[in-house]
Length: 240
Image (cartoon, rainbow, N blue to C red; front, side, top):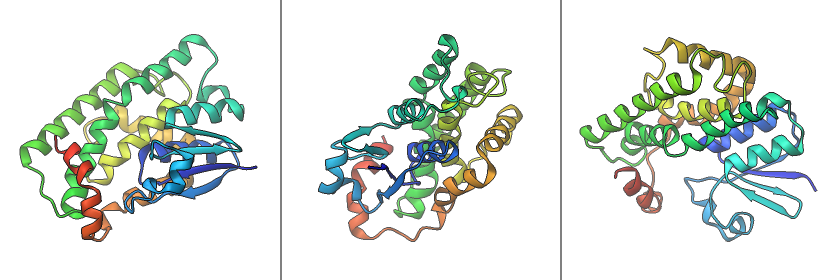
């Protein structure tokens, strides 16, 4: 049986998995799960991932949730080039360090920046208090400074001289605020140069393909009443 990946490319973790699989020539069947339509809550999808989140993987009778776990599973099973997830103990630890940090830091602030700056007012018709948006953008700026000073330093990539899954996760995270019009790289030439290196290493066509949906998010029509009701818990969470 072929590998199945359950994805919605509006989702940052899904884009990281998609790019990794495509870049490494991993054959898979794409099973699209439309998050805005609530398809992750269907009974059929719950059989694949009871957590009702994407991405999810199905490999024969084996199922797996959580993007980092999926990336590492694919890397090991398909013996991806070592630079993606190095065998060297300390190089591997650097990748792990970023993957552990990003969940509650860069990913969180990037997601909230996109929703508060663009999707709440455009898609849901909800205005975000200016002071809340300013706080979110300040938090994002602090995370970008840490990304630059703590992880990138003077290296070409986050874990050393070669691209790794850490870079893939980070760059897909940053496309959320960029899609909302945030000037993430405007005053950060070091991060801007890293962005170009990551895109070149991935391949421009694949990079653009993976991010096409999120870059068009600002053009989505307003949500209907049912969608707004379904997204209320997310709205409440992101407006805390």
